[in-house]
Length: 502
Image 1 (tube, rainbow, N blue to C red):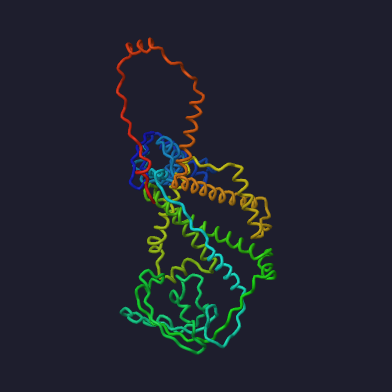
Image 2 (cartoon, helix red, strand yellow):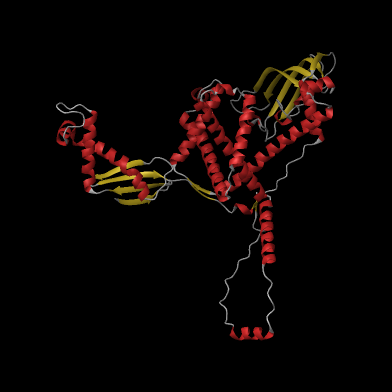
């Protein structure tokens, strides 16, 4: 067997394999025997018809086609082994260059490759904001508000009131062909002067304050210009006129933080205990949000500086993975992909090319870089850590869903295997993030320097003390000493000036 390889730009390799001439004759006879076994030939038992009879019945071309399939099935693994190729997926037969002797051209997808940057020089401060007393107060206020009762009042609106109104909105200077009326007398209810998220307040930030001081049946018109960075993209930089009328006003009666209310929330011993729990919850939420943003920026910086190469089949798998997830999400909303694309007025091919494929490329690069980081940093998960995490995950799931449906041994095994894989991936990602954080904040370098310093001290302490050489021995050494070879020039390493800030 002769092997030739030719790398391609798409991270695949062309492999040309040539075999001895007699190989084809041998496989033609095997092919004829297979054909004879699977078909009925008058006068012969299955598989017993001679080669010439099979050839006369089915023709040379049919036998040759079957022979090529048998040959490729048998020799392809040896071709890869001979060419020293570990593929990332099934290869394809590109061309049959000749049959006498057999000579085939294969296209084989290679394993993805990643070249990481010097990420140990990346520095990024880790400094999440602390939860303030005001934020805790607001969270408790929101909690009380969710249990509040509303009572009609006959007075002007005060801060904290529940206000029902009707709202109209129109653009002062609409674009050509644009409908100026973008809100057609729509009912709306607001808590006067308060919003859970002012930046997302509808129809604009601070609107709930505009109702304060008005009474039922009163009307008000205001003009507002949307900022250029408004979350409402279609209204950025545009001036709009809003007219609203108050329908009715209700005062919100909030429950007191008494024993009855505290027990209804979860049997809290005191208002202070509730406050501690709320603060811990806010701190955990703040930490999770900060960590997600921190690591996304950090990993994106490493991905941007990395070189990744992968064949088309790997990207195609990632595209399919995203589509499957989208279909699952849509199914939960009682919708299929076809309906979703129709609602967005999109063709499937355009949707995949413009939206799914870019997302798949980003996910694939990040996944490959994360895998390479784990390998480069020798990050591993101990058996004990994985077992404990899996047990904890299953225990948590048993509180949320009914696991009694997993009845058969096979179903339980498949369920446990799926949980184990998911948990292992999550633990590995967390270990990678912890290591990257230690590197980016300088902690990892400091630990290494400390370990090196400690090792040096141990060596020095263990080294035997030497006696001072006598003057006579020094003189003798000086007389016999040869001129040393010039030492190689050492390049100093800069630790501060060469770091990369993210």
